[in-house]
Amino acid sequence: MELSIQERLKDLRVERGLTLEQLAEETKLSKSALGSYEADEYKDISHYALIKLAKFYGVTADYLLGLTETKNHPNADLADLRLSDDMIELLKSGRVDNSLLCELAAHPDFPRLMADLEIYVNGVAVKQVQTANAIVDTMSATIMKQYNPGLTDPQLKQLVAAHIDDDSFCRYVIQQDINKIAFDLREAHKNDFFSVPEDNPLEDFLQTAEETAREDSDPEQAALAFICKRLKLNYKKLSEEEKKWLKKIAQKSDLLKNPNPQRGRK
Image (spheres, rainbow, N blue to C red):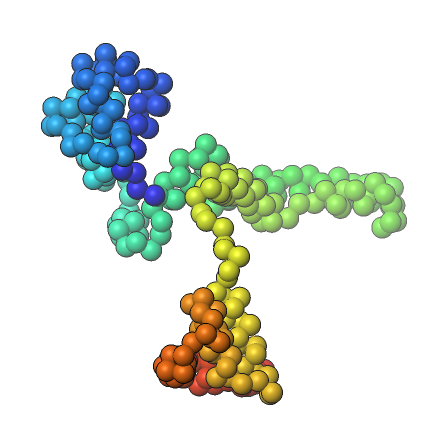
């Protein structure tokens, strides 16, 4: 969610652990002016105060004004970021949530995920696992040659069980990395979303669809009931003229166009 100027100014001050009095002393701006900049009833901030606060907090004026989400690197060179053309096109396309992508990359465990992924892609881990498996196989062959134990021998079965599927192991490690990051991101945003209201329109729609599919049902009445429920209307209290117009509206419902769908048929 995009922050307002007031929220940005207050967040920066709170991050520094400063009171309005302390900020006024540090910036030589009046406490009343600083308070008004953070208030709900926003007072226009002067160019002087904007530049002063931007320099004090070490951010850009564009960030304070809400023109960018980047605090410290508004003019970063793409060459320095080593982004491919495909990556730049993806970020500009709007097909992904760039804010969430930034949070993903900024997560403290993301470097480990990238390291594990690089090891998997380059085949380094696979070679190491294959080497360990070769050692186990050699030990198994030696035991079989010297002692000729049965296939049900506990020690031999332990050696067989120690044989690792290299690809599955590497993907498991990567999956664990991703799971931890995904969980942390979800926890960080768990209060960002509203819960589904008890009065769920989808549930009402599905119930109405079920009713219209019954052989003894009246599709028209089911559609009218659905519309009245969504609009919080008492059908019995409507006048005949109002019922007539409501009926005309209900007749445009897709529920009436195909009240008895053929389920399970192709």
